[in-house]
Amino acid sequence: MKLAGLLPAVLADPALTRARDLARAGGPPADGLDLTAPAALRPFAVALVAAATEAGGAARPVLAVTATSREADDLAEALAALLPPELVAVYPAWETLPHERLSPRSDTVGRRLGVLRRLAHPDAGDPQRGPVRVVVAPVRSVLQPQLKGLGDLEPVELRPGAEAELDAVVRRLADLAYARVALVTKRGEFAGRGGILDVFPPTEEHPSRVEFWGDEVEEIRTFAVADQRTIDTVDRLWAPPCRELLLTPQVRRRAAELATEHPALAEILDKLAEGIPVEGMESLAPALLAGSDSLELLLDCMPPGTHVLLCDPERIRTRAHDLVRTSAEFLEASWASAATAQAAADGSLGLGGQTPIDLDAAAFRGLGEVRTRSALLGLPWWSVSPFGLAEVEARRSDEPWRDPEPAVVVTADEG
Image 1: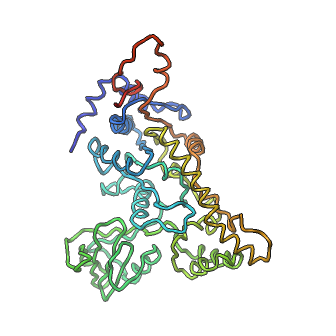
Image 2: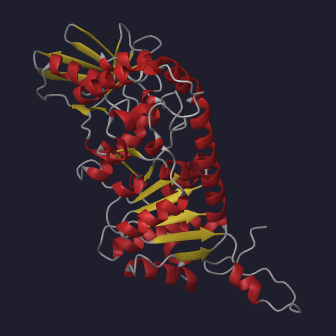
Image 3: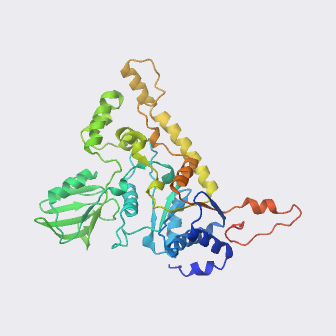
């Protein structure tokens, strides 16, 4: 459903008009703006800010932050009715904690890298890979540091009629953490036989079959996993990496060094040194890539002038606090046994209360730290809350309560 025509209509509200004008003017980045509006107006507020920055001439995407992943999906769906859907992207969060011995799903990684690729290298000729106007992200994604340069990772891209050496494509897929199998059944797998290459990108619903004629791509078509039958012919294969931590020669050398220094982790590190992906290897990223200098926040990937909008800041603050606390507790508990083994291997009497490798650089950042980083980057920090304190405090004690109008910057009762 397309509801873009409602945007001019809601500007009849003076408060929304004021918010749009402030977004268009920019204003001092250090000055935060707190909007009071019911939840139903959040998509309109985000869309108006995005449209205002565009109307003002400067391309300033909006980073809309929600408390949960479900709210992020719901907000993106609503925004797709107010803005062109290809201009709205959801930046999903890992299903795992930063220090957990589990890797995020390949489809999650693919979606994240797809958004980062569009932010770093937008393709103006392809609406699905072009510039992003609104990035919707749960607070979990905003708090978690990620490896630098993920948007610069080049996916495997093939088109019919293009020249590509099959062996080189196979090596590139392996470098991007695709698993080679006899028969493709899951995302992140590929199989080759003769001049046919099957690839299941993590962001696609179906795998693709690429037929080569020598070094020329002759045809690309999707097929069903169940019976291997062709579904449709497509004009491109776009296969992003399946992991955010790739086993480059530098990473493999560092893993070999750490395996010698920390025998308790040799089971994991030895495999990484041999180029074998291991479940949960992302938890070791700070140690494998020289600590905090190799990490950045999602804010660092956003273009200059991005407006950060927190949708329901109170819930976001609570969620952020819980995430930071849970992550710290999990780090201490999950590495206790490894630290004990390390102490035994060293011949010490320690009881293993410390992490054998410093992984604090990958821990969730506090919301205050993220806001400080936003100010350093010059990104305006806005919030849209369903509650307003100033209006409540200004009401006289003998004045009867009235439900105010549901407008921005005016306290609104959602009930």
